[in-house]
Length: 131
Image 1 (tube, one colour):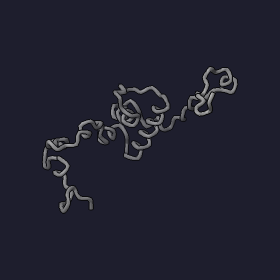
Image 2 (cartoon, one colour):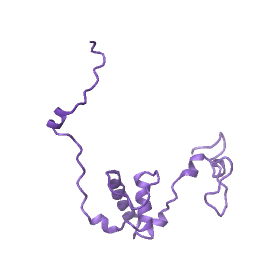
Image 3 (cartoon, one colour):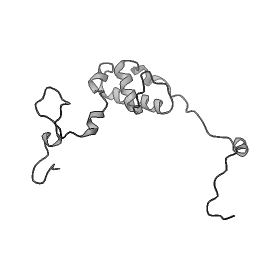
Image 4 (cartoon, helix red, strand yellow):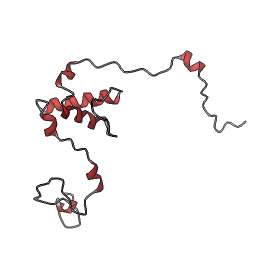
């Protein structure tokens, strides 16, 4: 068992969480600073628009993958990662389970052809070869 201090078991109070508070995010002065910056999306918010947890996982992962590949978000991005934006979209009701039935759009190919590469002006630096 992991212990917060030598000889004492880890408790919520050892992490700065106030026990028996009506506010689940209430913390004492020893709170971890990163916890205050966490996304405020809960599973309960998303489950109002999705039937079960399994569908939520499938829908959120597929939408996050599409967002990472360049799909337009339906909510403000707000400097979040694609997973958080996908969950925010589901909680807002903008993304539904019908999206799971849609085919995956083909990825955008940004690779150059050989002719384009030959005409490119980019030249790799020649380190260590001497002049």
